[in-house]
Amino acid sequence: MFNDYDKMNEEEKDEVLSKVAHMYYNENKTQSEIADYFSTTRFKVSKWIQDARNKNIVEITVHTSNNRNTKLENIFKENFALQNVIILNNQYIPYEDTLRQLGKLGAEYLNRIITPDSIIGVLWGKTVYNVINQISANNSQFMNITALQIVGSVAKDNPILDSPELIKNLAAAYNGKYKFLLAPLYIENDYIREKIIDEPVIKDAIEYGKKANIILTGIGGETCTSLYSNIWGKYMDKCDLENINAVGSIYGRIIDKDGNVCDIDINKKVVGIDMKSILKVRYRIGIVVGKHKTDATIGALKGNLINTLITDTDMAISILKKCNIKFD
Image (cartoon, rainbow, N blue to C red; front, side):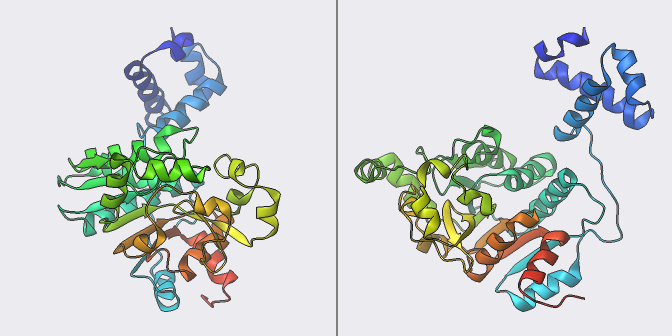
């Protein structure tokens, strides 16, 4: 039966994953013992265990004396123009659990600032997904919020990480509404882009997005400037890369080390809210993990592109070292 796992519906798969997780975590069975029970391989059992964690069928929480690094938070408040900073104390925590716990901290923060009339702009990516996923799992508040896209869709390989799916999930978590921006992130042809932006449904979505009082965004690292980037590569050429000092991206724009939007063609092709309007949003929340995004995050901080930072201790230390700020 379990050789047909891939043919099962989602409910049947979840039953299998629950059974496997129970045997592994509660009964302390080895992966070999579980494989024998299901007449399958250890490799498949290992994958099922990981799937159970990814789907929140099982959650692992490492209890520390304090899951926030308040010392580093205070240093960041003293050195950067931040309204709020939340730094996860993630020593000994693997990457996937760091993402999940950052998501929980982000969800708790959003619950504190959200109001029934909130208009929340949502970008894309794993960090934003984990915040919204934690809200969906733990929310007890029901507010008539509006979740929306502030830029067009990136058409990611995994659609659950893209803005349209994320705003639907966020709206559902608060029993609110959502508003799509039915366009791609970039349109290369200037004439076509202007015509599409001028369409009533697109124009209305962009104008409504300018009313946002909260934005949730990730930050793209230096790989976004590569010609091999899934999102940006097709829009950039070698000339672009030779003439800019790009460190990453935010809000669909490629930025330099000081947070300036680079003067390149791709940044003029964005379909969405303009940067001037974005910088007027009261809560600009950047959720970021991964030291390869250090320079991009510093740029976002210097340019005041975010005013709330949610990150982990490893990343925070990397930023402070790069900025020559003492933290010992």
